Length: 230
Ligand code: ADE
Image (cartoon, rainbow, N blue to C red):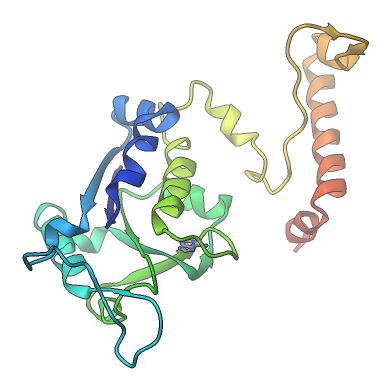
């Protein structure tokens, strides 16, 4: 998979993209991630990437040209028709595990990071762009949303997690929350690990975990149950 991230603030992305699971995914060759600095595609002396909104009002708008030039550069290396271009914006459809799974099967993703009042709307007339939000709240930067989405996708790629079954049993993957987990020691202060987990009986353990998945989902996220039953 190839991921391109176009941003006015590459510094926000640099370190997190070199840590933990994303680092592993890159080293394993499961994903190649390129961060493009929008300022490198500004064509004036001051490297301007934003400007005042026509019609007035507070806030700044990201200019269309730097995005266009950057996307043209990417198009010179890869066919953009085979890529999925996504704008990080609170007006988008809310990202979820189903979407993460869907995107993990794509070959080329391009994330555009909005800022301020967003991007000159004409960019949408030049390219097929899908708006994506990570929740009903406003971030000051699309970069954080791009990181959240990148992380959730990379961990689903082959050869990234040591145990991919671990990802498939995660909360949300099947619509349920995941069961609680315990590790050594078997007794801590007066608290013992549930008996069944030390029984070595795989079927009983799986049944117990399924029961807990349902119990926890019912208690903490009853809204998810409704979704599963729809
Ligand atoms: N940019 C600002 N807020 C955002 C959100 N909730 N999701 C994605 N991008 C954003």
